[in-house]
Image 1 (spheres, one colour):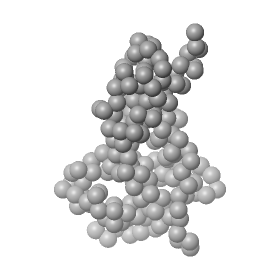
Image 2 (spheres, one colour):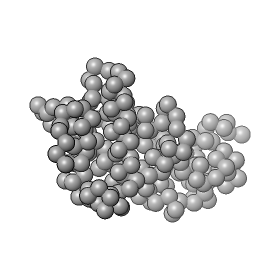
Image 3 (cartoon, one colour):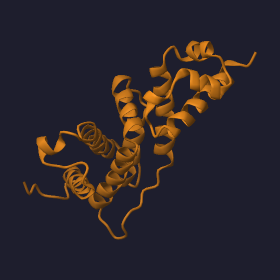
Length: 194
């Protein structure tokens, strides 16, 4: 009999492949498809993950974790810290928007089961490198956490954001301007022009 770790890995890889093939539409992915692709019984998939929702969340967290860990932002030369931070946030927002379904699962998963190693904290650590290139000091982590929270909240509320605060998330220019403004406030490099 195959060991549990290998079986779990085969299940995760099969599910990740199917999630990607369905463009993140996890409703189209079934346990039976995952089991067939992993060459494992449906019962074994259920034994290791107890529900489709738990399996999908584990896959999505792993997928997003890989993206967060390998993300290298494109920064404008000679830009100030606030502009750099806003541009990095805009690039993250673009990813969230392009991978809407899996991003939503990841964010909600972090909110439901927070951990010091989840994707929210990974994103916060990534932003802190732009806030304070010297390291993750407490102040840069707080500012970065605030930006992460604003970004996640705006993404989750993107369908009502325009009505609530006048920012059309679907308009990339408005989205970037919003994130540049928030970054300026967080780094005390922009005055309130409202």
